[in-house]
Length: 280
Image (tube, rainbow, N blue to C red; front, side):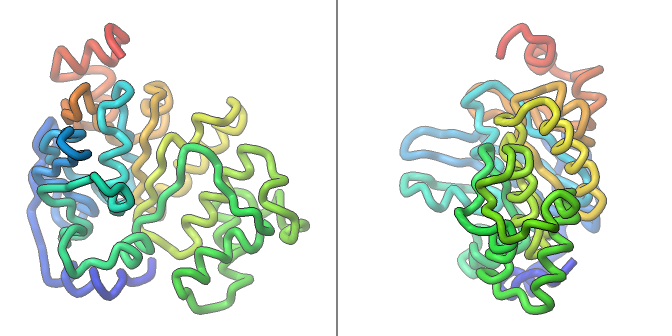
């Protein structure tokens, strides 16, 4: 992995924390903690979208975020790399720490943060450019030095797409199938070599075959990256994640535990009712 951006790097090295694991979480050693929410709240105007969230996300694991519609899953995800900054009425209180540094501190450059915390969206959104230029765009915009051809190839290989497109890198990314387009977007996200990959329902628009490919890819990526994925599909969360966060109506983090414990032995009746389909 490459070094953290200058606006974040020195603070990370200077700060060490033992973060809390509230809402069903388990205390983790600081060395393993990549993301730590502390009394994090998000408001859209006067409406509170997230009640105070306290949770830790550890490195090189897949953390799934599940819950009914409108419960704050995507709001929490977008808080991690400050995508909510793009919403004028959004206001954030509390802390969201990346490697010990609060990403909402005034000295943090959101662009530098997003070099380290990439994002893949629900609907594949390749640019109207060639396959090569789609991947190279992130490298160019982030000012990444090095052998551009080798970097593009490496990103496509990591996204399990190279063998399918290596003979047509000049073709438009829009000509690919839906599943290939999403893997192209993943390649674009990982090309600048982030440490965390955020995914907002990345397979919801795909067919079962393409979904299975994305799930296999997520498992592969978690060997090198910390992956946080929002999914509406509880079976998918059970299949691919190491730990699961359950948000319930009103933006409450009701549970955060190992995935097996969440699905087989939930500690809360409300979480059990959601998992078993009594409400959703």
